[in-house]
Length: 320
Image (cartoon, rainbow, N blue to C red; front, side, top):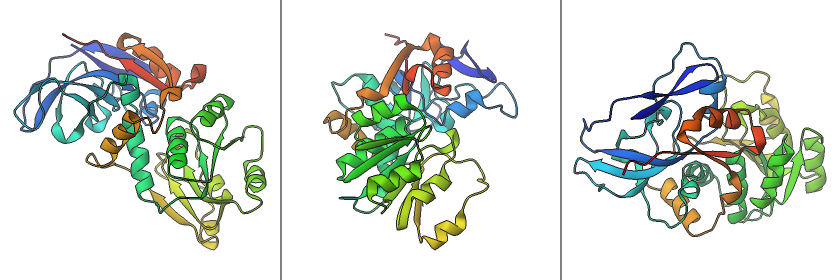
């Protein structure tokens, strides 16, 4: 069978790999049908790593597919599932994976929509850490797929204003479809002044940082948040962030939260339910769908943000 491996900076190859075996209790053999790239996959591809090649299967972790073998646990052959492989090692035609990394679902929606339940689940986990947001004015900094999903979820939760901020005009056009009530292109406009204008000088109750390693924006988030407001840091940060205006955090009495590792029993099932019921239409996010043998092109499109790329999906061959 095929597996993927990053051989050097900016190069990923498909290689031959042995079929997986069930070696531990509570495992299944999972066969992916559709996967999509995440911002946390990009650094393995486009940032120089200490040594090459990287571990086989890296980097992919947003996947839906079918159980093709089970060792008698809670899952059965033929069930459709959302799977989140450990350590981002998911580029395999088939893989052994623990049942606790699997969520069963039933849906008539296309698999490229259902795979978005993985990133949506991470967003819902972050929102569970916040209070009732009804009537709040909220800014979302960064309009990659995660920022877009925050806009949609915040609209669902009753925010009075959802302001999307990004440097790419193409992404801001999608933000309007995903629930943003206003957009700010901070490649052209001063985002602080724009927020002042939109809020009558009050600034926002909550800022969601969804840019992370793609473009650290913590100081901007601090600046546009009102006194005693909230800042939720979602984006994957570098190990250290220099130059953060921490005194301003203190003097503005900001409340800061972060989120990582969502709950497989709460967040992913809820995300599946939202997509199934049409509470969120994820179709505007799905900009590209490529076969697995185009994996190099898929990683280039996504990591370089080419051709308006948001969610770049990989379609796996299915062994019948």
